[in-house]
Length: 287
Picture 1 (cartoon, helix red, strand yellow):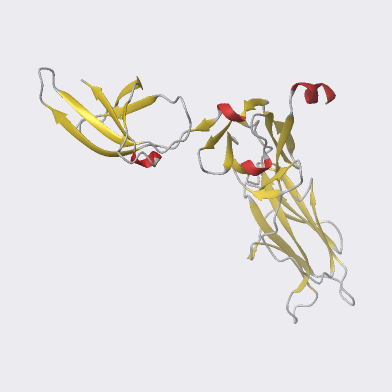
Picture 2 (picture 1 turned 180 degrees about the vertical axis):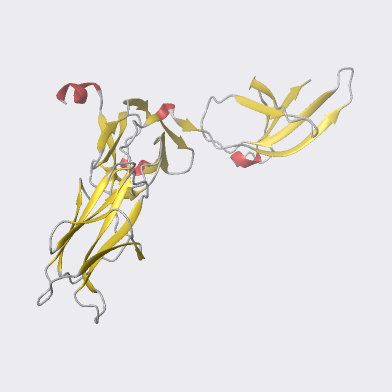
């Protein structure tokens, strides 16, 4: 880490943590125990077993029932002993579900709730790739984006090195007030959940090199009939960045293909007042 500090002034570490949120009932007065094997959070497509064990006073359960999302299960249930039963699922692919079990103590009384539990299935994260960071002029933020890969079906939180959390999926805005102009930064994204952890390649950036100038505003266009027909485009420059080149795209209204003119050299005409950048008018000529 010391070696990195020598070569880079600041290191920004962006970590994505995938956390599980309860989707069912969170407070239950249990009269027994329910558990899931291999775990309550597991890889999507796995085979799982849900066990229910009754501990109801003055009750020897005649039958034990399982429910998933309020619907009674009727198959793949095995009675293990007087108080315990197992529900088996093959290739479980639901991202989230709430399961609970009940006991029938007597045919003359309603079912008694034993306990319930939220279960969740998903995937380990893919390696985040295509990490890019830009600063849009006047935005006040550095915006970093990346490709998170396939959905993990688990809620996503973003945590910075300062342990600030953000709800995010594939981007984050970092205030430029917390960054130092002219500094070099090292940026990476780490994706992690209970099923695995992956880290992106490191991105080396210099703040001065990632600023995108504010777009100019086109004020008018006019055709000039000379020996060679020309069109003059007038626009107001909105950027305060010096030494920028101009690029223009144009196409016929009946054509879907855009033509691009790059590295245009503007001819600058100042208004009489010369008191505002907004009063500058740029003229570019092209055939």
